[in-house]
Image 1 (cartoon, one colour):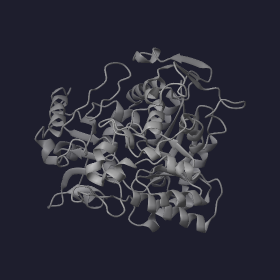
Image 2 (cartoon, rainbow, N blue to C red):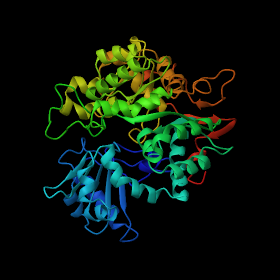
Image 3 (tube, helix red, strand yellow):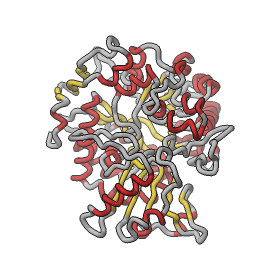
Image 4 (cartoon, rainbow, N blue to C red):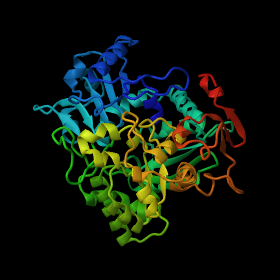
Length: 492
């Protein structure tokens, strides 16, 4: 899904890297985004073509959330879908709502689906469950075998140029399981592939597709793992997105609480625990998308309940992304034996933007690192593409500096990772450990795959503030060397 989003016509606030040419410079205002959207609509190849964009930033661009009426003002006849930067919010006009069968009954029963006083859709689909009902069909239109492979190559070029040799997909099956399986075999499964992939099954999707047989189907996939395509674990969602501020916050909540409201993905904690219980009891590693302090607490409570029922060692229950947390959360997490995979972009790109909505302290303390490391929690880093453009060196730079892109301010300096070598572990050894494949990748040693990256400078020897500027020269995956200059050509 990340490969589709990041290669769509962009509406991002921050500049967006293009592997084949000039970067998209970013659009800074709501009006600017709407004007660019008009240009995308004007360039439509047919009146039936859905104009689907990605990257609209509901926090950075300010103003009210786009509505059906706002998008109808651009076009009532051309289907328009605006997918926000978090991938959790979707906005649609009347033509898209009609084209994709969004009925009043469907809106009424879907968590996060906005409605008008008469019960019809207001064009706002907020949160994972609501977004799915409007975005999966146009995604399936885009993800034809030929187009899907093209977009995987686009993301693959971005990854290779950033020095990535193994990636994790934590939403496997969430769009179209059959097509995703075919595409991953075509792109990652070939002998000349320049990257490996670890697939984590989307728990809700697998349960919807297979019912009581969901775990057996996931086990079959795990048994089919090979050196290039690996299957391990299952993913669930606790609260909503960090970037769009749909995450659940504990007291005192949001400053502007009439605009931003937390959204929990299950009707109750019991339902949340119940969804994970069968997978836990079968020994699966569980990843939970958990962002706000409220989301993190309910996920901790759920893990405590599972541990009390069926104690497990080395379960590697992982919090993805552990955005807003407290020291008490870290201690409880350690006691329960869980891991954290955190998103450094929450500091570098979001702390400056979020201060007015959640307060300077909480905004600056997002994506805690040093506190967790002191509590002996295994912490890895990720980009959550397309939330952040894949770039391990940028993630390391953020970990050791915690500098805001907009202000240049150091956010929560006590949370900086003091040792560059430790930060490098967080995108290599500890990342592999988090994905449950550290027996095969993550470090260069006998018995593991000899995948590595050639850099023009040693991150441990340059000034900390220049780590993100280190150039990636080449990647070597399964013995295949690829210069980054080669993947800058779309025909590579």
